[in-house]
Length: 168
Length: 372
Image (cartoon, rainbow over all chains, first blue to last red; front, side, top):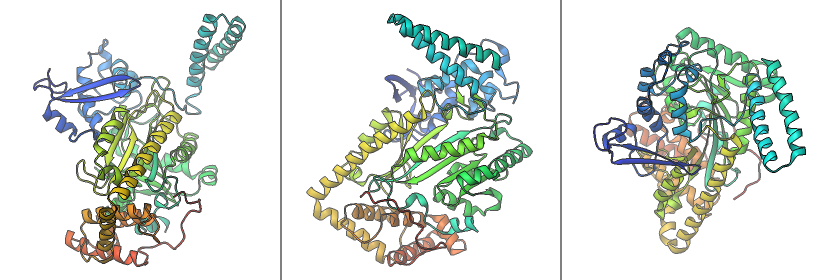
């Protein structure tokens, strides 16, 4: 097996991360591992992942639409990201959406935020998260044939959907 | 000048005695990465845009509601500090080493008087909010960091996306932007040689372990920093609770290891601790590594009550005092390494004889009950 970063030398350093029972492996050759800073057993300095990110980006399938190759707002290109492992502005996340989504999935095991929402900018997101949660509850209620509860949930969902339309 | 005092006083709130599990956990830290929506991330900011970010942050923090709730915070441009003073901030764990890389223009640091809150402006992200407290206190750190975050968000518009959460320059910080870490003193696990096993076990659980004050992977003072690697797809409370629970388990493993050492190798352990104590009290030349190693032994001796009548906090204080930039700052002039070794030995000796170093008065201590 070849190194995932340089694709030249054989991969003999395996870095494994297990999150929520999902296993992710990065296979590198010794040289790339040293460059990335993976040295001793187990100790993984913070900067390692960042250095590897460029490599991840390069091997991600090319985005479908050519307009994605550059962020319209800040001008960051895919090559810039591959080189430094840093995005250029908040809009880059939308501009490089497919590739960034995959990278986030590989780093974090998940690619969806479930934490704190900013009070002002996050209002809509809050409603959407709540809707998603209620729809899941509704499905569960229907499956369990708890129809009274399901009706309640359905009403609540309709209300929120109205809020969402009105708010936009 | 409050900030000037911070720069000459080796003590910080995060090293005070009385924090939970203080015999093993030195300090807890929560850091939030936040970026402003309307600007490119710091590595792509033009000089005038960087100034605008500084200005916006300063205004956000100067509002009366904020100072009333969170206290007065001092805003200082990096260029207003000498290079030595900037390094002192790193040695006191108030800013990251990366913050000092590159051009200091367009960067600033905000520090609350008691040093529990510090904000780096224009590091890798526009805002890095940090809360640092003694002992195992991640929950308290998170609450305080959250309050600072809310105060800033009241006037600043963050880069936020429904799907990915808080957006940051590096994808490793996206989502919650939360990095929680605990600094742990693990001489028992080091001496019983299980530390490597523990470290690789922790890294499988999505945690990162770093040795402090060491070269490469070695930790000179048996000090390790354990932090979460994953920031996206989990709630803040989950991250905080997970790390707290794991830290508690490490604490009990470390205590067991210490007790075992004390039981099975009492003579050797006490000898080592008292020798180190002797070195710290009487040495005339102390290099950084020996100082760290001896201070680590002293801390273990204090935690096991083999040495009495000194507070645990003195160890962290002397570790900060022993750092190169701090010594240069106190000397007021450039020092070569051997001059530093002499001054280090002198300051440690004097401090152990009860003399205070630097500015600041007695009794900045907090009044929480002692848990040890």
